[in-house]
Image (tube, rainbow, N blue to C red; front, side, top):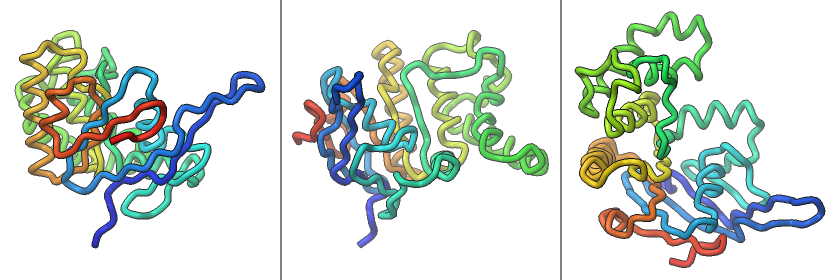
Length: 231
């Protein structure tokens, strides 16, 4: 049996305020299979964003293991974690995090620029641009390649952010309230697109949301309460 695409094993995370230890995660166990869309629910302060940062190798756990395809990766050195993160994980955030001065396609291409050397990127620039154009077409923005974020609607900006997350062909997508900044109709359109991408690409998705109706449409719901998985 294949190992999960992404998993956490007894993951704990604490921060220190002076001499006082503040535990955020208290032993989280979680697995997301390839092709699975998992919703992560929890009240504010439950530890959802902290867990997402650990799973995406943006931070390291106080104890426990993070595994990609069954292999522990949390204890890699900073450079190795960054390289693995760019190759394995796509991030989608509530507020898009697009560069205002760049066009839609330039924002998507940033994913490749950050990972490759200048020489490597220059050699592969035509292939990379073609891939970016294809992904933007996949998310419905083939006619908006040259538009800057200020010229795009909220839903279109999120589609650019999703395209950027997909450019490096990740195995896992971590989405933190991806529709939280959108009206209900636009949010439904974006989520239908994410479900289609999940199905067609067989990507593992971990979706943080407060929306119970949206969560029920996912393959599975995981609830985080007081730093622990409760169901």
